[in-house]
Amino acid sequence: MDRYAVFGHPIAHSKSPLIHSWFAEQTGQSLSYEAILAPQDGFAESWAEFVRTGGRGGNVTVPFKEQAFALAGQLSARAKQAGAVNTLYIDSAGVLCGDNTDGLGLVADLQRLAAPLINASVLVLGAGGAARGVVGPLLDSGVSKVHIANRTASKAEQIAALFQHHVSASGYGNIPHEPWHLVINATSSGLSAERPPLDEAHLAATQLAYDMLYGKEPTAFLAWCAEHQIVCADGLGMLVGQAAEAFAIWRGVKPQVEPVLKRLRQELG
Ligand code: ATR
Image (cartoon, rainbow, N blue to C red; front, side, top):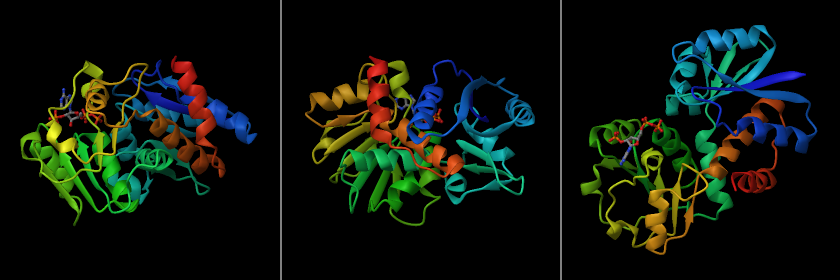
C-alpha cells in the first residue's frame, strides 16, 4: 500500500490522517497516511527514513515548512513565493519536489464561502509564514489589492516587497482608511486567546472575516468580528482544502472537500 504521512512537532493533534483516510475512502484509493513526530532539528533524517521505508509523499506542518523548503530538490512557483513547503513528493525521475497548497486551500475555501474576491480589497493581519503563503494565491484569485498589517510593521513590509504591485503594508495604527471587503487573520494570536489590535472602523465594508485558525470555539478575533455583525468563518475549510490539493498532487484525483469538512466539523464537536 502506498505510504504517506504528515510531519510535525507536535503532531498528535493533527487532523490530516483522518482527512486523508476519508479522501482515500471517497475516491477509492488504496493508501496509508500516518502522523510522524520528527525531532525539532531532525526533519531531514526523519523524511529520509520515511522514504527508505516506502514513503511516497508527505505533508509538512509547524515547525518544518522552511526545512522542507531547503530539502526539496525542485520547488513549485507557489512554494518559492511562500518560502515554505507543505507538500513533498518524489517525481518519476526520483527528484524530491516541494509544493505549497496552503494558499490554494484558503482561496478554495473563500470561493466555497462566496467571499468577495474579484476586484476586492483584502486586509491580511499578520506577517509570519501563514500570511506570506496566501498573498500570491489571493492576487491570483482576482483580488485587486492586499494590505498586510502586522505588530512588527517591518515584517509586513518585507512580504509586500516580494510583490511588484497591489500589495501594501503597515503596522495596525497605519492601515489605510479604505473599504476592506475581506479581512483575514493570519496571526497566531488565537492560540493565546488574543486578537490583533485592529480598529473596528476598518470593518465598515467587511463582508467576511476569516481566521486561518480553527477550533471548537471561535477565536477571539472571530468573536470580536461577530460582535460587530460581520459574517465569520474559521480555517477548518482551509485545512481540508490544502489537504485536497496535496492529495490531488500525489494521486491525480481531486477529492470533494464539502463532505469531509462536514464530517470533520462534527468530529470537532
Ligand atoms: P505562522 O507561521 O503561524 O505565521 P509566525 O511566523 O510565528 O507563525 O508568525 C506569527 C504571526 O502572528 C506574526 O505576524 C505575529 O506578529 P509579530 O510579527 O509582530 O510578532 C502575529 N501575532 C502573534 N501573536 C499576536 C497577537 N497577540 N497579536 C497580534 N499579532 C500576533
